[in-house]
Every structure is written in structure tokens, then in C-alpha cells.
Amino acid sequence: MTTTTLSLAFQRLEAEGRLLKPALSGPTHVPGQSGFRGEIALTLEPPVMLEAAFATATDGEANLSFLAGSLSTYKHLPALVEALGTAIKAGGKYFIYVSDLERASRYQIDFNGVSFYVLPIDDTSVYNELIDFLYLDKTKMKKMDTAAKVDAIAEAAFKYTQTYESISFEEGLKRL
Image (cartoon, rainbow, N blue to C red; front, side, top):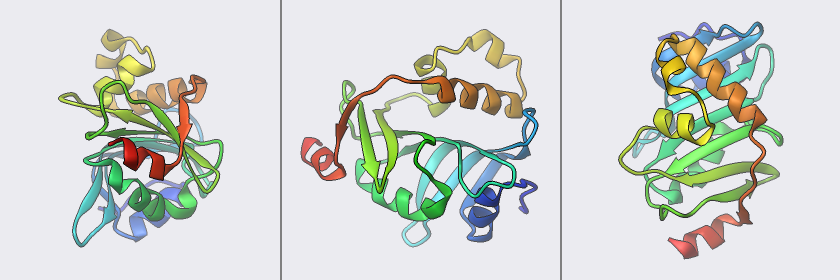
């Protein structure tokens, strides 16, 4: 599928064949904002994905302003950072749910000046986790189309200011 997003961040990821199974890949209802909902390929051989991904970027910008998704293991975080490359920036809001973290674990992990919220997930969807985590109204969300849902989640994420223990990736490995 060819993306219709205007954001340079999405154009690069699309050109590299990383944007897969899009439920949304194009403008959202916020003027000047593009969104994506689907999977993002981190590696092709073997295939490693950021599943149930949500992302936004300002049109014409080379960076994602918001990203959320799920990894099957914490150990894939460096592959995520490498795959996204220049599409991430300091000050962006990035929420990564990881299947093999203990339920009470919540961290902020810095990769080259870019902070990621690294959170546990089990037996639920990224969408449901984000709704609960960001205190969104589930009833209102059900009435929205995909672009409006991405807008609402991204807007709430931009306002999120909670901090968690800041650890290195290596420290996180020791805690698994």
C-alpha cells in the first residue's frame, strides 16, 4: 500500500517497507497532522514488529511526535530505536508496551537523548491500555472513527507528564 501521509517521518518508514497492515495511513482530523495505525517492521529477517502501533507526526516534519505499540520482548527495544532512526526525537511522546515486563514495572528509558515510557502489557490490547493509562472516555472513543481515535490518544499523550524510574536499557535487562 502506498501511504498518503505528508509527514517525512512516515514517508521514510513507508519507503523502507516498515509500515504494515495500516488501518490508518494518512491525514487525521487535526489540521497538519498525519497518523498511522498498524504494525511497524523493526527487522525483516527474522520478522520483528512493533504491533498495534499508533503514531502521529506533523506534516512536513521528519519526526514522529507520538508513538505507541507493543513489543513481544524488552530485548527488542534497541531494534525499535534503530528502525525508527531519525523519525524519533527528544521531546516526542513514545509509549512502548512490553510483554515480558512484570506488571508493576514502569520505566523511562533514554536512548541517545530520546525518552521512552516502557510499560507492561498482558492479555489486553495497546488501544485498551492507552485508553485506561491516559484516562480517556471509552464510551466516547467507541463512537469515533480511526483517525479521531488516533487524534484523541495522541492529544492525551502530549499532555501526559507522569514520570517513572529512569533506568538504562542494560539495567532493564537485569530486571527481567
